[in-house]
Picture 1 (cartoon, rainbow, N blue to C red):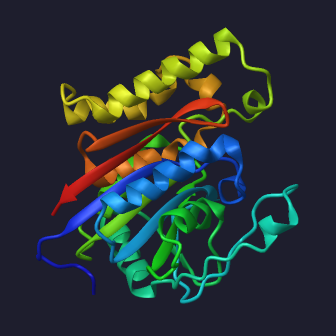
Picture 2 (picture 1 turned 45 degrees about the horizontal axis):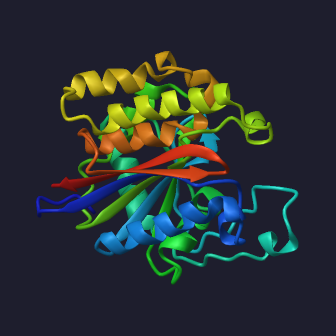
Length: 274
């Protein structure tokens, strides 16, 4: 049982994980991402366990990995041979998986456990940069195929009472995720649309002038933000942020702006006293 009344220090981190395995292959367009994730890891106390809500796993109901030794899933194609030899042999954490399922169930959320699924690149790529020793227990949480932003905020809310002393919840997505735009020559209009949405996202996540109800509503109505559907034709890479916000329910503690694949991108960190 992982629920306790002891004081906890949890963190939530929404990160932009870049293009497939490229951050681990020395790709120059991911240089800022690599250095930023390594730096962020040095600013935080070592977590007791890590939960990753990955943009690369969707199920009809939220599902949690519960195996003891999840394998790596190479859920990308067309990359160099070395991309398919990457390993991240961190342990799973079945007790935490069951505690998450219990908390979601207590919140009225139907949940499933999967003891066979491995870890996709939304987990192993950023964690190989942040914690290369691969010795921190991890579980992965799926998104919900409805892609309903309110449901994903609710997922984060339901995990607030997990009692591990120092959990790290990672929302592994990308603040900009228009695949066609990544392979189209940059224009002033494209740059302006990217920047406008990033400005809105930064304000939404960091402004202390917003009430939490207003912040939550902005995230639920994210598609009304400037050029939202240009930056996210499909929202699966943004919704891990909603899970993080639901877990934290506050303005972020730190925001990081950077260039990834020639696009303005961002990451957000929450420090949560329990």
